[in-house]
Image 1 (spheres, rainbow, N blue to C red):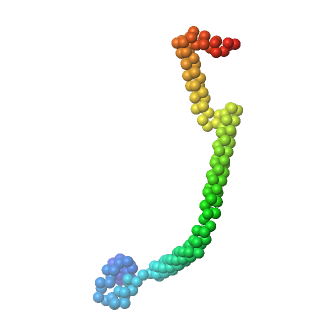
Image 2 (tube, rainbow, N blue to C red):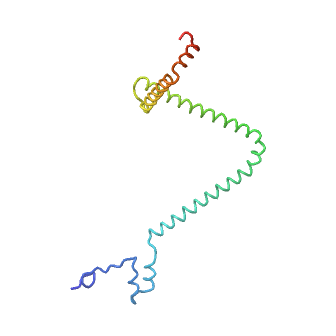
Length: 168
């Protein structure tokens, strides 16, 4: 007994992406055409793409038209009032730059003050170890220079110091 799938139980379901079944002599022209038709989802997708593209193209055209019309009507007005707009825009630029600089310097001063407060109260902010290292290197260098000066110029500097500061 042959099953409904064909001989030997192998499924012979037709797949829409395969066209080897169209080589049979028993297929009609209508069946061959229908095998190559797009699916409904593909048709809806293409229609959606075309409608959205047309809408965006129309909006782009309206935007360009509006920009050209505005330029035609407002161009002479801008040209006539430019002696007012140029100094005004320059003054506005200077005021904006001054305000931004003030805000930037205020934030920097606040950050530096906060860091110094934390450093001097012993909370060890970020970078405190580098400041301590630099301070110790500076003190070491100063003591080395002082020792060198005493060794090399011992009496001369001592006498000159007394001359420059008699009370010392």
